[in-house]
Length: 117
Image (tube, rainbow, N blue to C red; front, side):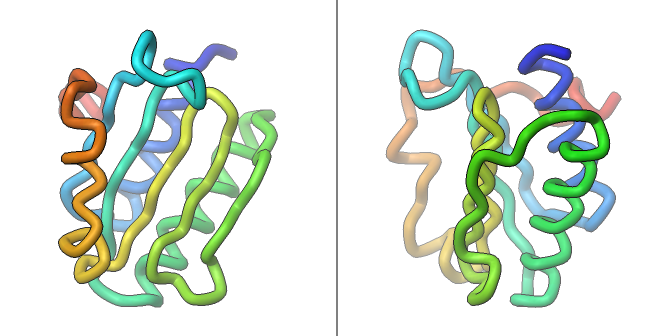
């Protein structure tokens, strides 16, 4: 499987748990960290945890390694490092505060509907 297939799995898993405002940034040529960043949020710690666990489980089931998972206990900003795809699952308040999308504002955005379609 390739990074685009992993991206599809992560976006679909986030959507299944009703993640809000899912944004996918194409980081190819911009960052050596990953090919894609996925940023989304939940409206409670419980939802943030559910979104993160679903992404982790779906990626593992598909044979992808979870390199690192940080922040699950607090469930305010969970980072899931899947190597080629890095997922940031925020609590809504923390997403508004950190505005991570602005930090990587030069990265092209991939239409979520295109991925889910």
